[in-house]
Amino acid sequence: MRFKRSSRRLFLTGAGGAVLALPFLPSLLPRALRKSVEAQGMSAPKRFVGMKTYNGAPVLDFYPRQAPPGYGTHGSDGTVRVDNALPEATGRHQNGTTYFGHAAPLSDFAATGLSNIFGTSFNRFHDQMLMLRGLDFMPNFNHNHGGFLGNLGLRTNGVGGVLPGAQINATIDYVMSRSAAVYPTPPEGPRVLHLGSRTNTCSYAPVDPTSPLAVGRDSVQQAQAFTNPRVAFDALFEGRMPSGEPRPPSVSERLVDRVLEDYRRAHESRYISAADRRLLDQHMTHLSELEARLGGMESMVTCDTSSPPSGLETGGEFDVSVPQIVDFWDDMVDVLVLALACDVTRIATFDVTKMVIQDGGDEFGMGDSENPNSAGRSNWHLQAHNWDNNARRWLGAGMRWVAEHVAIRMLERMDEVEEIDGNSLLHHSMVLWGNELSFNHLCYSMPT
Image 1 (cartoon, rainbow, N blue to C red):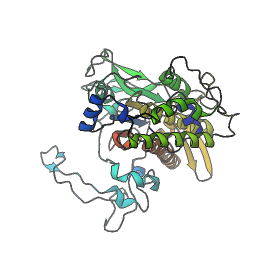
Image 2 (cartoon, rainbow, N blue to C red):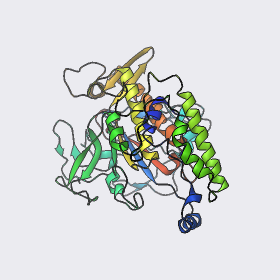
Image 3 (tube, rainbow, N blue to C red):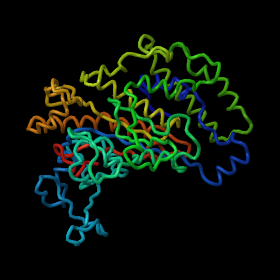
């Protein structure tokens, strides 16, 4: 794998062994295995990331408001009307008549950006994106954790409990985690990695881990997330370095020297192909560039994973300090991408309950809390209840920050990792952004 650019945090996590490892070299495989690989074509793993935002979502902010040439009128809600009907019926009305969904290429909206939430920074991903509208959860569902991943039975609103008539399922991430298409062999790390800013997740696991299709309240349990990137990193990468090899004490120790012996032995092998020699050269060039970028940062950076760097603690469930929120999600994204790139896990959930609001010249953090004493503008849950002009503007700005800071960082980092078949990690992944609620406390037209 290769990262085309690396931040301080990405280097810190990579120093656990992933960046220092030699790249995968097909020509050094045993002959029989190499012929099999060449005959079948090298395939990269499949991955899935489910990212969820909470409380009310400003639905109209997700969809285009500026119509490109040829699109005619807007709909009654002020968003662009799409008139191109799908060739097959989408479903049936209650009276039995069929109805048809409509579609438009996202690239048609590249000039202005898709919407208030998805700006032009997403243009490069338009060909791989689907933005869905009109997906409804069942009535009276209200607050929920696992709805967008398929558990449509358990509510978390004031009355809570089970929605009458609803089926309680293990969520789709756990169903996938038991598929041989995702894990032909057991992973090094967890089958599903959970990261977020609170322990409760959008994921429900079977109580019996061998039964991914568990159904019923007593058969599933809510998965718990890592809420500290440092703790997640330790759990994922501790012990991945070769046995007996000391951990690098500081950045001043040359990274290239740590793999030079292996590099020379592999480079001089008579069995290695010319393509793999070039791959080795690229890998060593990457390490040198990484080392140069980190020059002069000894006071900030340590490769000793026994001393966590500053800025990784969230400061409590409802801490909404802007610098802490920014650093927290930067670190979480880096841990997530590294875990996928190192193939420690192939499935992850990402629960986003804190965001930054940039309202003109004003900037503040917003978090999720049902604490009645947290009655200020920084309470995401309260603002979703208020739904006044300020709340709608703030929630739209917050979702835009999640898109432009958290989601785009994830996509770009995943796209920077080159896999064994020459495509990116993102190319082989599905990233799904879902929501807990749409407008206010309703579950109609869930932005997806």
